[in-house]
Image (cartoon, rainbow over all chains, first blue to last red; front, side):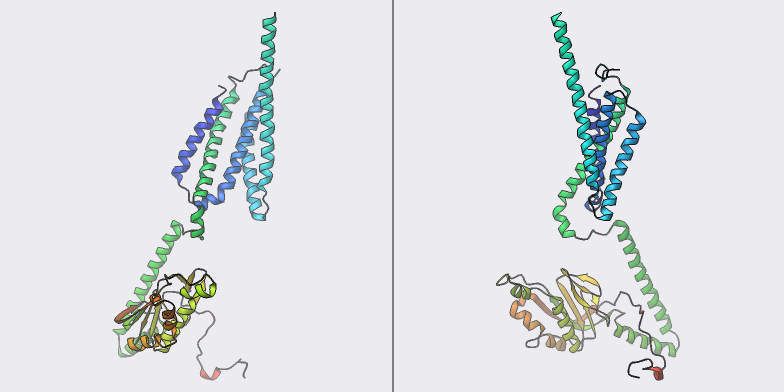
Length: 130
Length: 259
């Protein structure tokens, strides 16, 4: 079960590879939406790590999860579009904000697993001692 | 509830995360494919410059071309029907034909010359602009050729099938030369109707247009005299927005600075 998200990502990746290689998008079109797609990917990564963290902490809510994904993606793309219009690389704001959150969530998930590992080790030593 | 004692397994949220992970994977693949396709076309992008026309634009272009052909045909049909009418109409039609030839609106044929011009394949003696410049056909060369042909009595001239009319401009735009606003590239094919001997003689004048090219590289031009060549009509915009015909001769000069 723990591996499910990983399997999902790989399945999606394969699906996307096949899909996008069949679409055969001309480069002029690809050039304009490449930034948006990359930002959407980053927003998705942020939402998923946030979701895993919330799940571990036991306060996962599906509506927050899904709406967070959609709104973050839209906001990131909107910022990139606005930045294009006014000549400031506003998408950097989205990249920095989302990137920070990704690292924060990852560190919390790591902390959870390390603590769990340490607790189990302690329990084992207690059991063997008694 | 201690978060460290609850298990990861059999939680409903794992499935939702998995679902979104699938979307993330798709986006990731899309990003990678997009960026790599941009990188692949990086070299091509320089050569393309302007995006090629889309399919819908091509269809629209074809439609408009068909429309032009259809309207031209209709116009010719109407003219023939006029010509088959009474004497007065016939005279009018002949007059119109003359005006059309003068204006360059109808295709014409007759004896004349075809001059092919192309950039030299020789390596210039140095890379300095002064030297390298001479080995390329410029807009000025075409202008001189056209001017010389006009002086030699050419009655109709076209460059790469662009009919030259009174409003034609020959100018250098980036790597191309625009004639009637249509970009053309070498090799250039200048057709002129007139007396072939006179036309060729005019072009071959000592210290003339072709003389300069010949001193540089004789392969830059090829001059053919032909008994019969076809020159297409002008197919561009014929509307006038500012020039108005003068109806009454006595009003000429009214509002003029001289009066």
